[in-house]
Amino acid sequence: MTGMSTVAKLAGEPTGQEFLVFTLGDEEYGIDILKVQEIRGYDQVTRIANTPTFIKGVTNLRGVIVPIVDLRVKFSQQEVEYDENTVVIVLNLNQRVVGIVVDGVSDVLSLASEQIRPAPEFAVTLSTEYLTGLGALGDRMLILVNIEKLLNSEEMALLDNAAAHVA
Image (cartoon, rainbow, N blue to C red; front, side, top):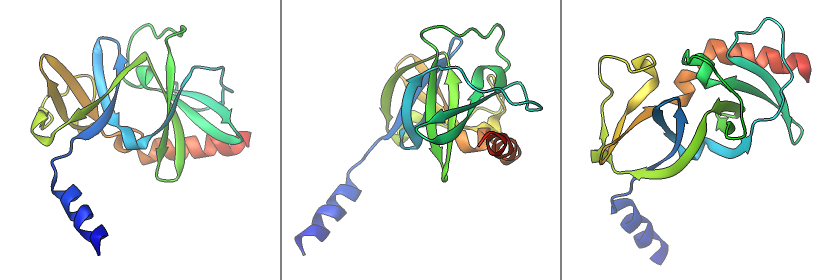
């Protein structure tokens, strides 16, 4: 029975939520670390016809066809460049693996619930429906993104079709 008490004790401790912090332009974003499978450099992808510009294509990741979405294009950033700092965050979203291209990954931060503020009514770069809130860390402001909502179902359907044509 000792196992039960430790579980209860752990549940009672204040734990922060961990976010992987990435940059797009001058802004820092955070996504739930539990959704992140791995971080890798940007490799060439196989382009697919008739997909929106932010869908860069697909890549083969150890036998799995993974669609790659460039969040910088999605967030209408100007002048998207690929260099040695460009990274792909491979996400595992409800049995689906997707890569997102970002300018860079800076760190992993743990935010306690009191450090997370509701998203403002006015959007920063993206629609507030994609935001879970803002993380405040001293003078740093993290835009916390609901990545599943961001890669919404229509886009996911496009990605599925894209991946199916290549597989």
